[in-house]
Figure 1 (cartoon, rainbow over the protein chains, first blue to last red):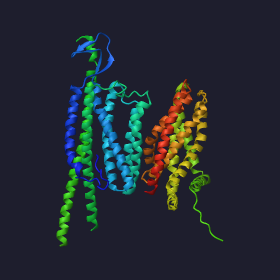
Figure 2 (figure 1 turned 45 degrees about the vertical axis):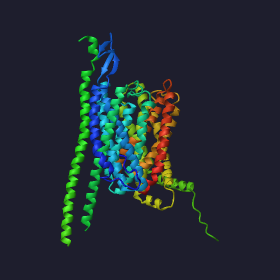
Figure 3 (figure 1 turned 135 degrees about the vertical axis):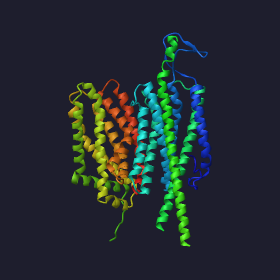
Figure 4 (figure 1 turned 60 degrees about the vertical axis):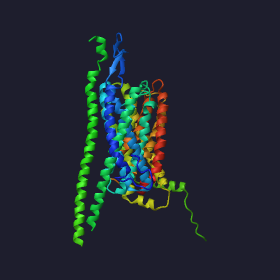
Length: 257
Length: 63
Length: 238
């Protein structure tokens, strides 16, 4: 997603990011698969509630509390959420670029980044929700973190609804750029909310006592994999949208002649 | 199995369906999105080739 | 005799724009009456919902949120209208022809929206008290309610002004405004509702909840107002 470093060159399909996009996607797929396997076979189990009775010897370690398998969801839940925030940040960046230059290309970039963000937000919601269902026993609760994240999702959906409700392309891109910049305000709120409101029951890694090395390694592998996957998906979608735009432009030109 | 060990492992089996579902649904969402993009890409490429043919036809006619 | 051409100062422009809105409203009283009646109707609906509760404590804990529900829906109605007649009569194009700083338009419009909302709240909040809170005893420092109301109203009017300028140019304006407005003001709404509830319930240590929540709401206000102010130029010129 880090194309258009030089301000002169507009992002376009087939530029250098596309040449690495394929390899990035492949590496992302491999890394997430490795991360998946690591989550189950390498990262140590996490202890839950303490068990009554004497500790047991399991695999050379004394265990005195319940082992939680449900925590394995975390290894993908957090990277996916981070990618959704990152995609939103890129959408905001391209929206600012659009408002500065009024070039439709940046609007396209922002829209595609927003779409990636929505996909990853949905993934975060699914993984988080199934964990919530098992650990908290409910499908939904109005925990501050969950609420702000839901709000973020609603704003992203509203962004696409707004795009569909406006016909003039210039106006559409200006308005949606404004909305995506406003949506960006919710990202730090969502990130900080578990620190600001201590009554939040959403787990925080630091509050849960940090991660051991093997867990950190697993999260790291999953994170890099997911970021690469997100980048690959962004470039693929961007190329497709650009091609569609060029086809449309050609069609219009042919009809005129 | 002794009761303590049973309790240590007590949440693992009940939580398994949720974990499987979480991973499966997440991959499904990503997969659906990618499949959608690829299908759109194919469609647009087909349109592009039709357009190219049209342009070539027009060029022949105008000569 | 010479003709002296004087460019009006920014403050004068602001005053003129604000006066235009107020005069227009006082002539027709369209917005205030429709908002007032709507608020009353929402209160009646609440009455149907709350008629089922028997416990006074439940009512106290719920009423803060209900008050904000009332305010959000009423402001949605008002914000929808505030740009509609500008658009219908071609007034907006006229204003845009005047060489003035676009953010002045934002400030004037936001101020008039704040005033309208406050006017409606002056009527509805006592009514709310009359209908729902006389049967129970709200906390002692109940009057502090004014603070979250003020902070919330300023924030809603500010964000709402930007959003209603956007949605007035879209298809299905009313729906679009709600779709954008509710999620974007949500953090503000949440903070204000928790501050209000703390005050109304008036339990031990209510002020420890009240002031942080109020501070959060005010912080969100400042960020959002600044952002709306900066972005308004792009929106209104589009």
